Image (cartoon, rainbow, N blue to C red):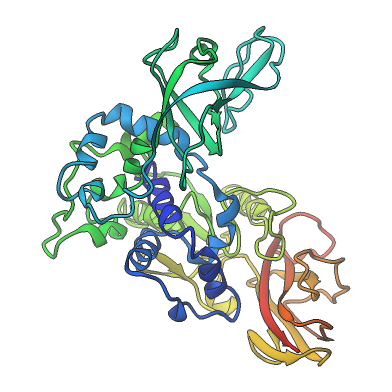
Length: 486
């Protein structure tokens, strides 16, 4: 049930919350107060909906660069599988588009215009290429010279528009519908993989830029309520368990899963398995790993004895190096290397790995204990305080006491620490630390100009206790807020 629902609910929130994301990010950052957020009714409902569906609210710091991710490719698939949905969305009671008071009408764009320019984006690579993997941006028509990557329109749409389709009304491509990855002013960027249709376009062709279906697909998850084992959909159920919104004829999640992976997961595993999941994951919500653990537990007695689930805090779905926000997130490679090594030892020598991370699922969110011993898993726990708290307010030039405390679970050993004590957003060189199960570092900092500064500390633990090894180093990071007044 992940696709398309994870992306639809996220896009719905991105549209409605676009003007208040700075306040949301600040509220969920170190020393913030989510209860102090001032949102209107629609904004509060959208934030509650996406949070209950499992989006980690601390992960909204990436809102400016999050974009559509896979949604530009997924929503046309939704329309292909359920072609009657957009018409129902805009006209049938129970769908958001049928509510005349909903802001979706304010954001709807239907612009009739013409193609003013076909914009090329470099030369096509030589030879025939086949789309594969995750990134299809390399898909071009061989021998076509410069690949057309965008269309400049004679007019720019007014208002907010993140995604849309371009329907060709006249010319050789008449009747075709182009998927767009982005609309920036009068420039409509085209999703790769549509070269035959793009080749038929000409300057002067009449087109309609329309985001109606794109907007409709953003609440598709409300009309895909699955069985009770998917508790995050309880927000769309009546007291007797029946869905409140009108439902579509079929659930697309299992169909999309089968198409993507060749199978629908059941949890019927006969070997040993370690799952690694990230608590800031925006594309595979953290509760989904717990859902799979529950499926494993449904099978033969003792089946879960051969299964572990390790949660990694402050890590995302991807593992870019360096991280886009290095004082907010860490890579999960060290946890993955640890899982591979532990799995091999478990299978080959019967050496049991660390137990599953201790956690609770609370209203769609994974909540883990504060301490390393209570939390378990393989990731160290790190805290950073300023003047003994997550936040402090001081005057210009006044000293601030900074303390880093870290603890490694199990046999892990803290081997390094890196900090940003300037609030610049980058980590400095590693501190020299004495390897051990615990780490405490004290320092003093000050700031010479007013402002709000976020300081950070990243800690690495070698999960096998081998301080000399560069592998299986599991990272975690903590932040604190310093408010400097004149």
